[in-house]
Length: 124
Length: 111
Image 1 (tube, rainbow over the protein chains, first blue to last red):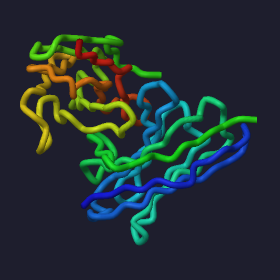
Image 2: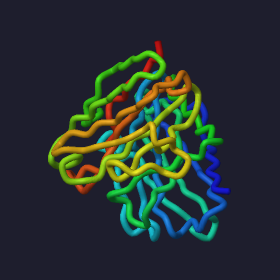
Image 3: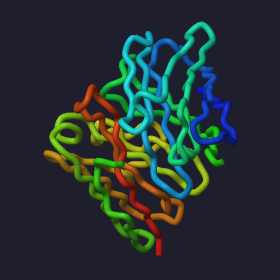
Image 4: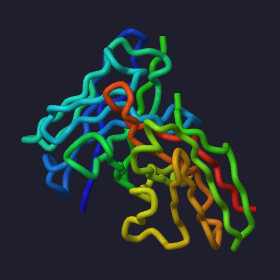
């Protein structure tokens, strides 16, 4: 059974950093690209970043480019998001999602229906 | 900031057919497959339609997708109370090294 478990969220002050993690299981992790998607309270979905199966290709939304870094450790079946220079507008529930291809592009996303996401609160 | 435009709301009575539109551009909907996601209240998004009109296993055939040029649409026939949710279109956008973009979202209400 495919499972994605996010962790690492919390309360952080503007300008500080936070690292999110996502543990994947039930599938061959290094066969698929992985993505981060966020949802601010009461708002819509926003794609944040994606990383190819081999970490060779990474893509970012304009809103986080230069501040966030996506990475993965296939040996640990884990996905990460290093978030730096956090802003109030980064406050959201962050979901990890599995791509449908090894490549980042042209994908659709699968979210774990049991997933909770991890909440990032940015406030002074 | 969403680059795919959807109506903020849609509604219908049980059994009716509801259609949701999604307007994009040549760089996204016009040149890449469109996906649709359903987000029930308090839950994670669920892939409803992929590659414009394909349904993942387990999704009822009451849900159908189509695409023409730079616009796409999701139709829900035989509307049920359990269909009350937010619906998002999405597609890969080829601009600026590539990014995945979601629509603005449509809240479907069953009257």
